[in-house]
Image (cartoon, rainbow, N blue to C red; front, side):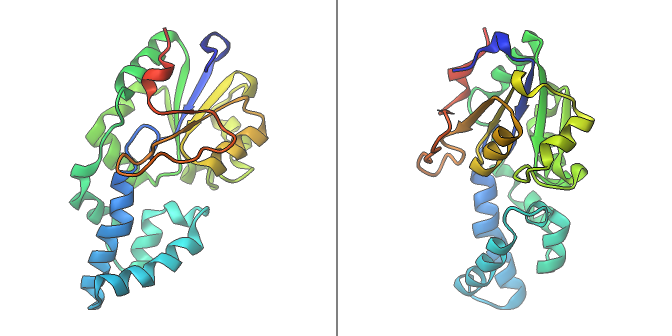
Length: 217
């Protein structure tokens, strides 16, 4: 599936790719609505119904991924609420071995995430995966999310790469499309970002069910 000998750079997404998306799904669809309901004196159903349109309106924007934005908008301490359910943060199977082999293979391995710094710090502190990367790039430092066509050009300015010798592994189809349109030759999707949900249709992208399928020699 991947010609490792042709690759120099590996870009990896975090949530849903290296980490189980169940944490984020539970957080935004259950934990936040519950805490919002408590604060506002609403039922869970009323809270959920009020929050969903607000979520949908911000998807694909930098604000959607911003802990500080949602803390202001919802008048909740989002970072603290994430800590309340941090026991749900989990690494997908085979990820540590995959990352270790990548480093030994001599590739430049970079985490490229839309996650806010506060979420990134929490998750790296729990998983320890940050030790495996040559660099970690947060979209909040670049100013646009990975779905944005301008992201990859801006990334070149801080983490130079040759698109023809680069692979991006991500669970987001809009992100994979923006990378492909920029010229990144190898784009690989993840079939099961959330372990509690069925496999997703990755449409035009080749996909993996686990990192054991693409281990470097």
